[in-house]
Image (tube, rainbow, N blue to C red; front, side, top):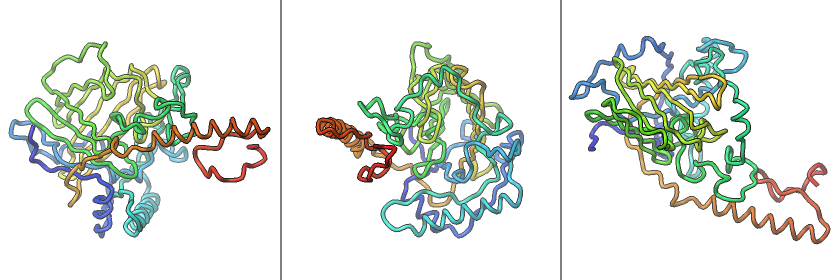
Length: 355
């Protein structure tokens, strides 16, 4: 399926160069969901609303996933609060533009007034986990960002293992790799995520879902149009992925259902709303909203060679086995000590509480 429409680059260096070249930051007040789509009427040659192109969630990096408690049910920042966020975003953009070395974080070029990505429940907070979900907590939830123990590759996240970040984890803004490309053809929409290079093929022809016996990391999506909004209902998930930045965190269950609503608000903005329903994992459903945006010069989702350079798994496991041997050797000498932490300075002198 050949796509000649615009594409987007979420690559680290390209994103940093664009951010550095941008002289202004656009202040955006998010349109209400009910009003979305009215300003964009362009169609594909076969008559579907045109949502194709190159998008990034970089501009949402300044919006917290959950709302601060003191903001209560407020969806948007006040003028004073918004001015502070503008200043913070500019500071971050300038810092990355002037960073030395070969690694720079991606930054956005717009600032939004949303107080949180979560817009429902009204308090902007992700609902509590169920007792069943809590019973599934494991080392794998944080993987290389946690303290282990690391006994096998199964103790790492699927992100650590270069397998997938999941549907939502592939769109939530992180430090780089936030590009995604939406392509359209008669009867299908396809979305490709830059980091971990997942691609979802979404049929629009009304076919039924796969048998519930068939489970997939990214589920089984089915799409249809409601006016200018693409609605995607996805079921048939495994219980092996999570909903969080880079797909990390406590894993959801195989009862997960996602309902995504994608509306092109204008030439530069694609509104993405997703409702999460998983009664085994969360006490009630919740909804998040992200604005995916375009910008000049950000034009290709680049390859993301993850497995090819993933020495972290081997090195982490070998380091853990070396620590096993060191603990055993120290014990034979009469030295009883705590295991050296995974996160932090392993050469630091242990404190009294650690000895």
